[in-house]
Length: 390
Ligand code: HMG
Image (cartoon, rainbow, N blue to C red; front, top):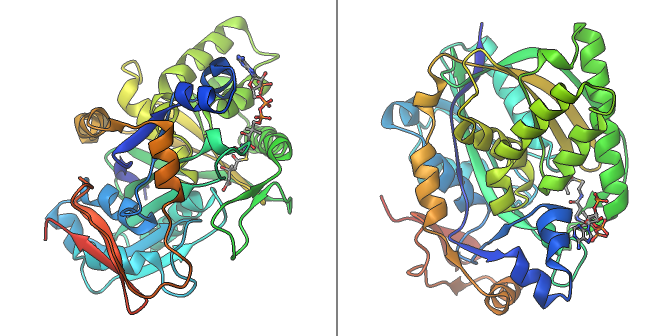
């Protein structure tokens, strides 16, 4: 049975900062952020959005009534969870008015968990061929003001509808994966911000990529030529480029040119949104599919998923006939064009405007947030969400 991505869309908040402004404010040469890190803009999230609303907004933009009635599994991948017990998927299930005979869960392993969610969905559909599974990857990346990781922040969510006979991309069964216990990045329960050993994280990412890519080629008896494109978990675009270049050293000039040219086309959405953790690899996929006019149906794409801590997986997908007709390109471009650029001072104010820990009652003004689904406050320790379209 062919199983894969039937629909795919993303949501990112309505505000961003230019990384040149951030560089100037931090006394850094702008070339470091623009070229050295490879980020152009960074999404800034208002307190009226959280991992639940980002995901719900992403899903709302791609689902129709038929999907809403048919989805029987919501798998929510995040490392920005809002509750130690209740799955974020349950909130989204209610906000979207999904069929009540549905499982809703949350999965975690840093940025890798979106891929884990897809693999769980594949297994479920193999047993229940008529099922539609909603996979959500949603996160807010926070390292703190004036930190080394600040330039690699971002916020957003990717929603994917996984079904049999998918219209966009079949996910092939061949896959290699690996776990190595490394403290490169983590976020203890008491902290709003991630802890990171930046240099170690870059080394570990490249090591797992090289290891898994070699293992995949050996297991399936293929060479680099078997891939029409390579996609990466993209904490910042230079990270993906570094990984790509690390396997091109002994390749022909033509192969190097082919893959680097394509990488540069595909990195666009990641470059202007920032790190969205679990959704980042899939944002790279959306970006390539929507930006690369030369990609053809039948193309085989290799995908590298990495989650600090660390777990990695390398797997492949085949683009389906007329896949372009099933993308949400115009919708995404409109969303990105409508974003508002804010100053570094405004960003710092938004960043510091967090909810005091343990607060049981609070109300937010959601009138300035153009998103259809917002986080409106907390009542008796219960988060209040509003779908303005319901
Ligand atoms: P840093 O120390 O600020 O940067 O840390 P640097 O000194 O390494 O410089 C970065 C690049 O800018 C270098 O290029 C410089 O040469 C260049 P490279 O050697 O890398 O090719 N540069 C310039 N280029 C042009 N013009 C200039 C200029 N100046 C310098 N004027 C670091 C960077 C990424 C480590 C830091 O931002 C950080 O710690 N970020 C967070 C961690 C991270 O994103 N790690 C990525 C791998 S781990 C991962 O992907 C998992 C993750 O998503 C979490 C999860 O799984 O949940 C993070």
